Length: 274
Image (cartoon, rainbow, N blue to C red; front, side, top):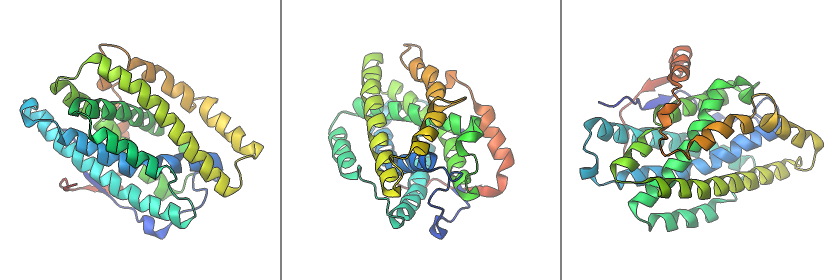
């Protein structure tokens, strides 16, 4: 039986949201926006990777059920972020890395299933680390519009819930240590580079790329107290351990706290075909 729940979120992004919805802070807003822009293509890649695992490798019924619900959760995330990104386009913020990302994913699609899963595991680890920070450090979304806070915290909860699924599927398919960590190094560099470029483009469209207050905010959110850099460092390095597993960092209490506080924001649904 699966431990995951596919949820329908009670938000309507067609109503739009503010240009600097994250507490009026341009850098924080445009960083989160840059992440959202990459999600629909990335989440479809994750779905395709776990679907490609031969069923004879998934001998554990619980893992088979979790793979199915992983797909359901990621399909729902993709749908919400497509709506999110349409509003960004209306605001004059297109996803400039789309063509390059599609070409990269096309190359990945031609690789074997173990490489696809190793890349998915690496990116899922980054989403899990960021999700933990969103739930653990409220100042990352301090002053955010309520609807946008709900979107990001809901996404963080579900990324946390399923953070071990792709990893378990990779091991079940016979994936080993060196493939996993070498792809992690590559993914780390590409993820940082692509996110930086898109964030800078968004800020340039705002006319705020070269403003001192923009980069003052960047320094604070990255290197300030409970900032992104410090939050990512240890769990990011933990991935290199031969004994690593995502649930060695057990943060289920963050999931339950959000569910308890936001029961009116969602309802469970059956997984949808992607």
